[in-house]
Length: 193
Image (cartoon, helix red, strand yellow):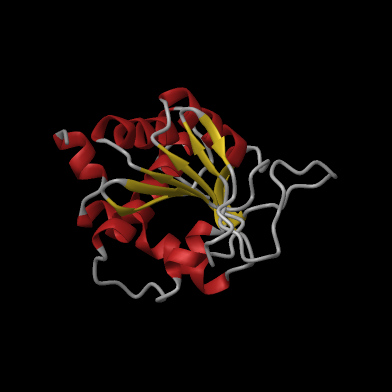
């Protein structure tokens, strides 16, 4: 990890944005507007996402509530000039369903490089979560775009990540300004919300 990247996820960087994260988590589900001065809108939006990621990755001592992970996963950071808006993710409207939603005890479909595998009827994992294993960079970008546009509202679990794909997720979420929540519960797994 470069020095610049390391400083973006440092304790000091987290502390700089902690009051904003605390203000949002204490008013959740009400949205908040933040004046990013002296930073640009884009820089502030990226850095507050980095601060949340740093907190979730390193579990720094904080006054944030214990359910911050679930609050952040259900939230989005957007730019509404001249402010940054943090609010619950909007639910998609319309009648289009991307994947069939199961109400029985079926495991989620699994997307692999060879396509979507069928439901595993023997599993007792009731979920609407999409599970993706060993995706290509293009599939990762497509999934982030689908989450950004609220086409996918349920979390997407990405498994069997290597270092290159993990870097791709982090870089694309920042550089392409995808409004996507990303949590890394393990070194080889990511959850997009």
